[in-house]
Amino acid sequence: MLLGFVGAGGAGLVVALLSTGFGLPIHDAIGTGLAAMFFTAIAGAWSHYREGNVAIRAGLFVGVAGITGAIAGATISQDIPELALTIAAGLGLWFLAALVWFRTRYAELILPPPGERAPDLADDRRWPSVGLGVVGGGMSALLGVGMSPFIQLGLLVVAKLQLRQAVGTTMLVLVFVSASAAVTFSAAGDVSAPHLVGTVVGLSAGSFIGARFTRRAPLIVLRVALVGTPVFAGALLLGGI
Image (tube, rainbow, N blue to C red):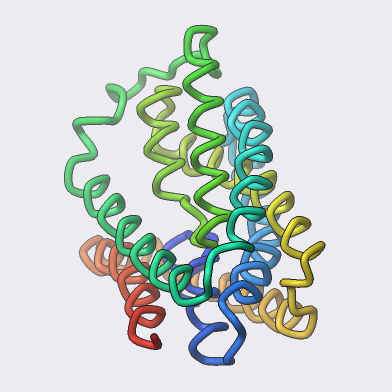
């Protein structure tokens, strides 16, 4: 319900809950969380596409580049000790919370002027978009934290998308990233099938309910939830060390 309310894929929160609440090793929690994010990203991307919020060309450039980063990040993650990876994931979630706070606080500094809609990834922005995909995909798979705020900010700055486009296109990017990362973790035996099924069912039901409250809640409540969710997830991971 919380993830549906704030409109996030939720891999970081899922990783924290699977690790601290269900006792999964951090590598298994990350692999399972990313696999669950694949299903939620598909649903979110399709929904945003129907609403006209997906810049297809930008999403494909960033998403396909993200596959390379995700495979590399998931492979590197296998060799990181469990304690170090837990700490890194927790700090990564707090970093994302800071990015969300910056976006909500200083959105006018990075958003294009109202009504100005840039071409769907102009030619001079292709290579920066590839870099965004590699870095975002790599960090998502390495830490299992989704990196949605980072990718959204990148699409706002690099691709010059409007905010609704950036949010919807990020979901498309996460389809590529989560799929490739989940396959890599699964090949290493780091995806728990029973926990994956339960997580997907729970996320699907809860997100549907939570999304109904997004437009009804006061803006200050939504902002606190947006920043507070990754802060809470990071605290869970770091507090369980």
